[in-house]
Each structure stands twice: as structure tokens, then as C-alpha cells.
Length: 116
Image 1 (cartoon, rainbow, N blue to C red):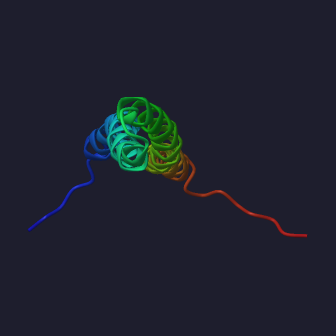
Image 2 (tube, rainbow, N blue to C red):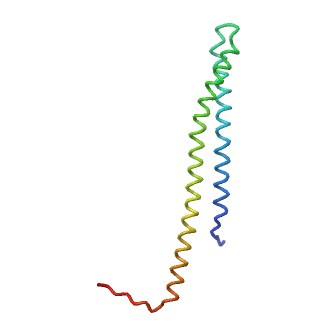
């Protein structure tokens, strides 16, 4: 099986990482809201009829924590995408430099190097 280098695969992976980074903030906020609302309901149960107030307050607090956690996770995915794209750029630049060096070597095969 012969494998060839294909930078479009890495680019596709980087795009997928950016999409995942965008979604994770919303998902973390949603999950934070749900868990915060549940916790607020549990904490508000002994107060009698004020369960919705505690549920909403807990949901908002949970959503804020979820957004904070989601942004941190999103940053990790964005960093991974940037590292992959950087490696593609390094390969492209290295390939160009190697092609130029090869072309120069074939044009001047009898170059003399003097040391000293």
C-alpha cells in the first residue's frame, strides 16, 4: 500500500477541530445550565414554593461555569488545529526551498567551494 502526502486531509481535520471548538462552548453552557438548574431545584426544595427561582439562578450560574469550561476546551481544539496547519505550512515552505536548492544544484554542477 503506497501512501502519499495529502495536505487537504490535514486541512479538513483542522476545519473539523474548529467546528468542534465552536460547538463545545454551546454544549458546555447548555449542560452547565441543566446541571445548575437541577442543583438549584434540589437546594431550593426545603424553602417551599421558591424552587423555580433557585432553579433559574442555579441554571444561570451553571451556564456561566459551563461557558468558562467550554472556552478552555475550545482553545485546546483551536490550538491543535493551528499546529496542524502550521505543520502543513512548514512542509510547503520546506518543499519549495528543497526544489529551489535542487534546481540550483542542477544548473551549476561544477561549482567550486573555497575554504579559508
